[in-house]
Image 1 (cartoon, protein in one colour):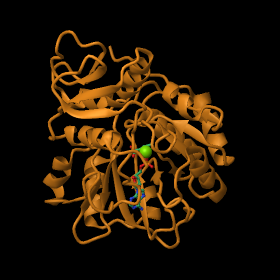
Image 2 (cartoon, rainbow, N blue to C red; image 1 turned 90 degrees about the horizontal axis):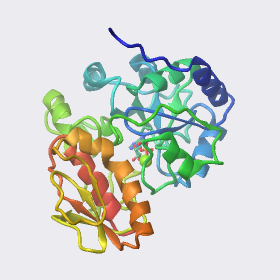
Image 3 (cartoon, rainbow, N blue to C red; image 1 turned 90 degrees about the vertical axis):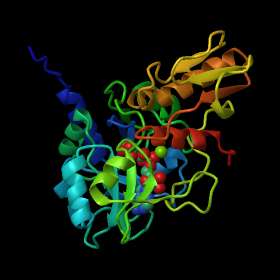
Image 4 (cartoon, rainbow, N blue to C red; image 1 turned 60 degrees about the horizontal axis):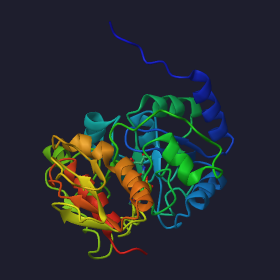
Length: 322
Ligand code: TXA
Ligand code: MG
């Protein structure tokens, strides 16, 4: 027997009405929770930047229920159409030339002549986008620089009292943000590794230009600031074990005698590791502080597939704070 997953139609309709009225509504996607606003409403978009404490030069991604709606605001070439065919709905964001006739407010794209668009693969997100009937600008639903939210409770911890509503869809299955790909140049460039492995994109498009590593040269994406996803406790990378006064973010078998451990994946499964990353950082941060620990030691994760996204987030979480 196939069990049908029922969604609350009234919750979706209410959330859509709030969005259309210019309010901010957080909603689940397959990657992380997004903080949604009507992308055509400049005041609503400005409120997103204010609620997150996000610098205005850092543009937002526009979310759509269908590729054709996305391509009405951002002009696709053949590469973009092939990627949409293969990966949408899904955790891939494409940066494309913004169509001059687009109704998306200029603030959404931070005044750039490009626009980042994506069609998320989450039933509640798609239902909300359809009901809202407008492009929805949505950064991750966390205060700027903090760990991204993968549950409604995480959203409320960071933004409770500052947004109209959160649509609760449980835990996000992918757990790291979308892959951001810049297609405005002759060569496609990877601005952020994410839910679609770069290898899968390269299988379709050939080699990608890679954005600079955290702490490297000037960031290529306007939002690629070095320090991000940061827990309060300092993070030490490439550990094989935790010191007595450290918590451990484990991958694979965890050494016995560890004071406090969160295992990303006992079996070294990279998709499982990605899905457990942000919840683990939050939990180790809270519990570690409660136990008086002085930091978090993270075991090494292979760079392949979703491991690249996990390592990117860990490197930023460990980077010197702004
Ligand atoms: O998975 C995701 O992408 C989530 C969910 C909610 O969809 N959203 C998300 O948004 O991670 P945010 O704002 O946290 O990250 C968007 C990234 C930023 O690094 C931003 O700089 C980049 O995409 N971006 C957006 N528009 C851009 C543009 N026109 N050119 C270059 N980079 C852009
Ligand atoms: Mg974010």
